[in-house]
Image (cartoon, rainbow, N blue to C red; front, side):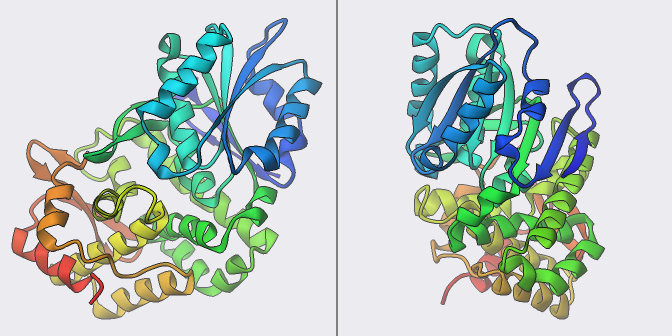
Length: 367
């Protein structure tokens, strides 16, 4: 079992990584309020609940926790206000109070919805993340970003709300489809690209083992990814740094969110869109004279080996720019992009010319 901490003063919390953690009660009990009869609301979806909900409920019952269950439809297209209201309705019907803990059992969609419900129900409840996809274990479960999508833009409505615990059970990753697993690898690769060259080089050497889902390399990749994110979040929790900071975690996301919104939520998985979006960012970086062609090839090769797309859909450059103009990274009317000045070092950049953006998008789309 591997353990690290997101250092946020009084809001600090542990990330625990290991096998068969769902059946362990010690970490869960330590994160729950010390009450005579603790209550929890487990939020899951139609895919994850049949697989892992009984184990989690049994673990909670062992430590005397009474649990209510909310099972949502599966998919990015359901990360919306209707699903959020379904959570509120169930909690109100169960007469949940401020002593209730919300537990997210699922991937990024479940975690974002559950976290936003925790941030807003009676102005804030305790929250535990139990991510069940690789993407959510290395990215969305860590850092406290919660929210829902709007038809005009992804993640446009939300709040920062830190969990009390992130419990990453690596055993559950064996049930992921090849496509879902690859989607998570996109975020793993991101950490090497933005700030950890040795990790990127390790990925180049060990990607085949990761594709086979070998336990030890997988646990190391999750731990290294979480460590990188924890360090960034600790330094810029609310993403307010004018240069660098937490914004660097958004490499490829501005282009990627345009793909997800433009294609319709759920058509492209988040990691797939981030991989294609990162190639657009890398292409723009090359056109600015920052990346060498050989570095572009290295990045493209790693994504291809991971089974991820390296070109975006042909939405048209005008449509990309329109969608990107609604992105959260637009500040005072300026689009703030995350680019690479070398592999292992990302920078924020707000001076991209429209002509360069169009060229980078067109060069990085399907032909």
